Structures are given as structure tokens and as C-alpha cells.
Image (cartoon, rainbow, N blue to C red):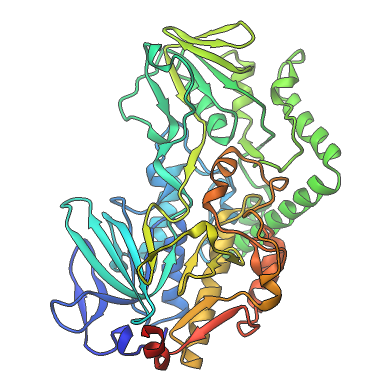
Length: 527
């Protein structure tokens, strides 16, 4: 727990505030602003994990989790398109501390149930306030505090909180608002145009001709899910994606269960197996990309008709420059083989009243058009940040290990992996935050902030991630919103779980890249 000073609201009484849930806060009077040691933004998989880590590693820490939605789950709550499922296996996408006992690729409902069990088993509900949309976060060096404004989504009431430390777990894209290119003639189309991020509850596609624009994991999920009910589903793509088809089961896990091995051991063993396999495929994608490419294409070819045109599944880029999508039980290819779905690789010329005209001269008839065309980056959750009264220019900061930023005190930001499960990093960061706060308490520090050393000041400021490492559309469109990196391990998000899992526990908190301040320095900060 961060040590408290006069500026950190140390005095006063501990009360239980009432709302949707009960949250313990320290305040100075019944009318004062509720104060917490740590304020967590978001009750998705990262935010629930953060709450678990504090409960188990920092008992006695006062914290609150503010969630804009009406319930927990994040992505698994806001996504409602047909077939919604994970694109990472739950043995690694799940927490290390909570065994996963279902199929490796899980539905949103299964993931929600898993997260709900974590909340219930660890008494986390009393710390979470739903329907609280944060509008701004203001840091004061004089008070060494964050002041957060949140608006209740049910009443519109503005509420204020203060916290010593801010833990950003809100994700990195704008929920419930997808990215749709502005194609000519969209207003001419007579049917509905639906983005997967904005799926309506009442969309009836039974017996309808559907065109799904996109080629990533979302499109590969929606197409087979709709194909069973629609008259026909066409996946229209500008360029193909790499896919890995496979059984939605883990033979090792099934064998261990047959031997009545404890689920905690099964989870850990399979988790290690999956992480080892992930490391090996990543290594091979860079060491021998042509061989991996051939293997991936052969795996798809085996599930399609013998005369199928494989150019629809042959990307122009090398493996792992975008996410490789897993297709459980090959359902996408089964739909194609059965004639219920098809793939067209072409560019859109324009929308027409009855479908889409392609640049090749062909046309696609459609009753419904679904755009699975990605999303918009929102690195700070559309929250207006300011530091000592000045608006924060997040993109001008430099990242410290992909989770802290120069010029931004007392804040951790959770950003996961592209080539491994998101939650692997959320767990690593959870351990780190607890170690950092314990270190600060031991040395009497109330403020921590990354600080460039003289040799770091001379380094070139580079984009958040090198384009050759990941060229996804949403990153290319939003790279200007993300902080800079430097060519040094401390000043970048390596995207390498297999290195970070060993490096994070050994991070030297006194290597000169973090600057600390104590309560005695408040007056100096104020001046």
C-alpha cells in the first residue's frame, strides 16, 4: 500500500459507501470525496485480475474498480455478434490462479461465467461499481493525488474520487463502435449494414443472403455461425489471413483428467505446454517463415475441396505480421465445403441497392451486409487526462516497459500481447504493481514516474511498435495515438512474453529509470 501523507488523505475514518456494491474507502468527513489507495479502470479480464492481485498480495489496500458498463466482462460483455468466442485458448487466456476446465476456445458466455466465478470466490463484487463512466482524470503534484470524475450512466450524476494510484485496465479500443471504411454508395444499399461491434439484438438473417466484409478472426467467427441459418454467407476480403484449424480440445488435458489429476495441476501443465508451443511457432515464423507458411496453407487446404482456389487463403505477408486466427474444429472450412459459405477476394467498387459491385466487374447480391472491419484505438478509454492542469499528450510520452509513461506519475496501463494471450501480461503486470507499491511503501515514497536518463535522452524516439512486427489495420490507423519507444529494453513493449515472464520479476526498481518522491517533497512540487 502506498504510504499516505497529508496530501494523500491519511486522516479520517474508514467507511463503507453504498451504491450498487459496497466499497471500503477512507474519507475525512461524511461529505468528503471518497479516497482509495488504488483506483482500477474497467472490470474486464484485466481489471478483475488487478482486483485479485491486490486482494491476495496487498491485503489492507483500499481500492475501487469503476466500470462503465452495467456488468463485468469487457469485450465478453459488449460483443454480441453470432458465434462470439475467444481467439486465444483459455489455458493461457485464463488466469494462472483460476483453473480452466472447459474447451480451449470458449464462447463469451463461458468466459463470463469464468470471470463471475473469480469475482464470487474472491469477494471482489464489493469493490466494483458498475455504470460509472469516467470522463476525466487529473493529477496534482501538489497533492500527489489523482482526482477522477465519473458519470453514473443511470442518472447522469457526476461523482468524484481521489486515489494515490491509477491502474488502467480498460482495454485499448472503443467498445460498441467499430471502424467502417467510407465506401461509395453505402446510402444506396436497401438492406441493413451492421458492424460486428454494433450488433443489434433484433437482426433477423434467417434465409437471407449475407456478405461479411473482412478476413480476420471476427469474420472467421461470424461466417460459420451465420451460415447455418442464412441462405448463404459470403466472406468478402481485400486480402487473406492466416488460419490454424484444429480440434477444440486438448488431448493432454483430457488424458490428465482421465487419470484424475487435480485441475490446478492440469491447468498449470497445459498452460506451460501451450506457452511452449506458442514460443516455438513464433520463433519459427521469424526463423523459417516460408516453411511455416507452407504448413499453415497445407492445414487449410486439407479441409477444403480438392479444386478449391487457395489464393483466398494465401496472404501476401509473412506469418505473424498479423494475428493468426485459430479456427476450432475447422468450422469455417466446413461451411465452405458444404456450400453454405464462400470466400471472394476482391476490392469494393461501390455499394448498390442490391449488394456490392467489385472492381473486378463482378457483383455480390446481398440482403444484409456485415462489416467485420476492425475497430478504433482508444488507448486511454476516451478519458480526458491532465497533469497539473495541462492536458496530457499521451503520444508524446515515452513508454517504460509498455506499462508506465514519462510525464505520467502513479499510473500503470495494461496492454497485452499480439502473439500470446492478453491475460499472460495482465498477470505479469499484476505481480509487478504489487511489488512496486510494496517497494514504495518500504522507502516512504508516494510518487513514482519513469525518468529518462541522460543516455536515454539521446536515443531516437520510435513508433510504439515496429511495422514489420505487426501491421494490423487498427494499429496502422492509430499508431499516432500511442506513446513512443526507444531502442532499449526499458523503454519499449517487447511483445515477447517468453522473455518478459523471466525479466519482470527481476526488474531493478532502483536502476535510475524510475523517479520517486515522498510526502516531504509536496511543498517543493507545489512551488
